[in-house]
Length: 70
Image 1 (cartoon, helix red, strand yellow):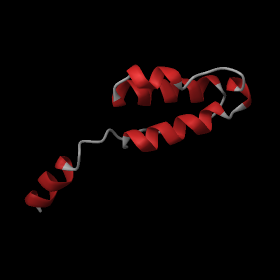
Image 2 (cartoon, rainbow, N blue to C red):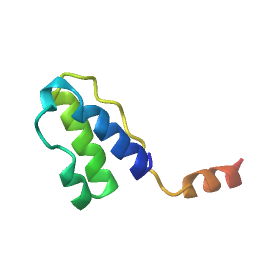
Image 3 (cartoon, rainbow, N blue to C red):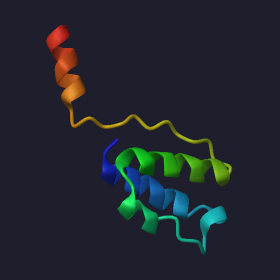
Image 4 (cartoon, helix red, strand yellow):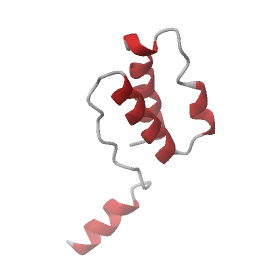
């Protein structure tokens, strides 16, 4: 998942009743993509939403490697 997609997802979580009036987005500036994905999962869990699994992005290298093996 790209950083942009993670940030959009975090905005969705920010709108949940549990986090209205709280800032859960500022920390994203200091987090790696992996840490940001985990932060989102934990926030979703705390809000009572089912956490969506995040596939780490590898810049497309994984797809190129898989295509070469086919």
